[in-house]
Image 1 (spheres, rainbow, N blue to C red):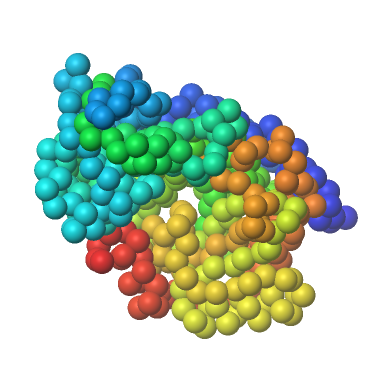
Image 2: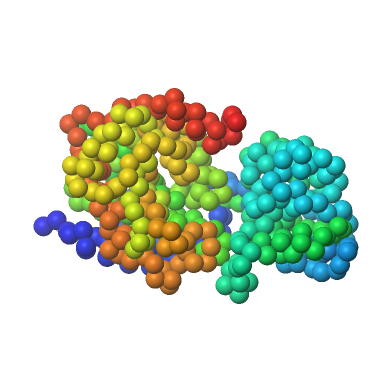
Length: 424
């Protein structure tokens, strides 16, 4: 007798509890999570393998920011991973608040320490590097955050940034401290960073269930299993990882007409590195892939189901019609989604993203509250996304004729190009 949704959801949630620990790119914990996922697949009768790939990493041994004029005070900061280092005694620099880093903000900033609003984006970094500052400072959080309840983000200068525009000294501080720096009129600072950059090893977990009738048509499930610093990554995205494990259980017990792949990607949080590495290494077989199904974030009690397609409008209409027929409350739209579906769409493979986004203030990502202990996730809510993914997957994977055209619209191609910084 087929298992109930409640049974599947509770089992998936139990696995989620086991795997909810911080799993940063290239760390021992990421490796441990990969081995646990591999073991779980094999426990269910599906041989699995781990493919390693290089991922840019680094360590910051020292990061300091001290205001020298018109007052003296040292602020807690973190250095960006893969930041340049300063001389051991640091750099004494004039300080400028450059807001959003517009060209007008950056006049006369060469050789200075500049503070910009929030996170340094790709296009902002391009402008900043043209201005040739000696150090770049961003900030995170909100001005009313309590230090004892929040963590100071550890950020990374991604290889796409440095490769295009070069490296620099980069720091991050709290929003409340950024406010004080500007409000008190800081004029001169000392910046000190001691950092090392290197390539580490990350891992993708892979397995396959061959199709009984159409083995050369492949549907690929994907979810990333890594997390960011300070976060146990239950919501983002071990929730998606355990959902596709339930898909593996189902299709092992009910052999699919088409070949089904299961991929758990490492280092997604560092720029989709796992899925990029996999699509690059396996480009010769991508012509057989007819669809990529990605699950990224699920299980908040207060939330709503979202289905984001990366193919054609016809694909979106098909999926929307199916949701209505099944009576599944899900908002369906065509758009890019910042996850492991992007490298597949970039290679011409249609992709679909299943997510359960938290209602306003009811779910947390990239911070310490992405943790089951905070109580905003449960098995019943996880089951809502699991149910939608399973009902959709059973239909398309076992359809007599595959119902989704292997085509990416010009609109999505353009958005992918912009996402991958190929065009503005």
